[in-house]
Length: 453
Image (cartoon, rainbow, N blue to C red; front, side, top):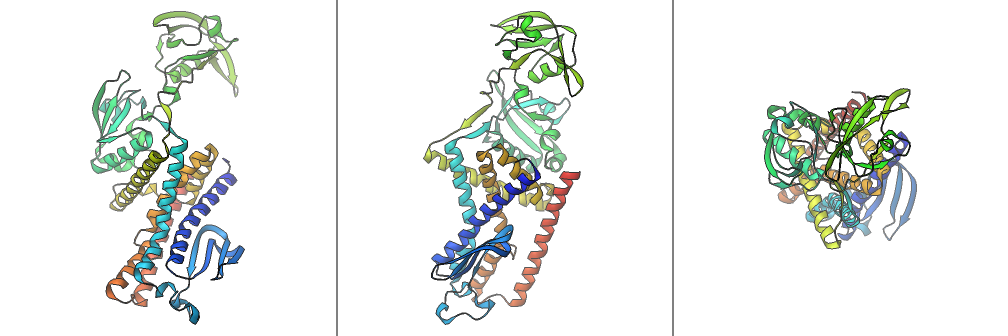
């Protein structure tokens, strides 16, 4: 699923599902309010499949271009309507009903996200504890006093049980005043408060992929765990030297070993060399001598000890799982926080506090779709939830060609008692189309810059 075709397929599936949900919201509320639906289409262009059903003879279509969809209601502005359908046209229904129909599309996107998150919390969400990995000397993180292994307990007054909540809170704090207040917990349970101060560099660090690099630390990963031996291979030098499962290597050839990544780096450069290995066993520090074995990887000589990591990541990785009721509460809270964060970031892009490089187009979304699908159904469902929220927020923007803009039109009509003039509506449509073209231009440029830049 990692190929270009796999990414495209995942993208088409994702868009089709989310558009179907969005348009179904318009469709079902339109029917509930007595409007006549002429067509419900997933995709644009020529229909490649069609079924006609119901007393209204509604056309249900799958069309050739799978990049959107639409619901077409009966409307007197498009021409004369049959006498039997008088009063059932979209523009003949009361303004509150029209607004309800327009709101239903985004509302169903938010509802989809809640259901998706509910299923994920019920099944169990893979969760990585927000902890600090390697800290770059002289960086913002180092100056603030972050140390490898610290857990991020809170950002400001927001408790952080996972990296998603930590990242959202860190970005919110950083773009506000360039300062990120953290509550950290060391391995011995001692907590302390520190503040990362990036000052005027905040906007640059909001560019995709620059946050951790710019702050000067990386998230704690498997390579940051202590060099605990989980398995000793029979044909390796470690076995001959008396090392065994459960030992923790703390020094090799005089080089301190803080984590398994340090061990790999130290061993790889010492092929065929005799080294002293210091390790802990039952709380006692011991030393043994061994000759690092040689192995060839893609023609390159590297050292080998013949040990494997213990693989015990339980302190840093777990499954968040809740019952049916608590899962719904968590799902609603996650949907709300993601919606607020999306709106806040959009607003800060407008004011220039957040880089517009965060706007993603179809190419980047397709890549994320393919990667999430490859990782499993739970990751793909989480991806769909995030994109569904983004789609809901985008459609509520007051741009005339979107639902939000049409809601503005209907609200004005309700207040003044008559529709906007045709000239005003055409002007609004032109402005809306220009705004969308501008937005998509940024999105495509960002996509291409990520590929070629």
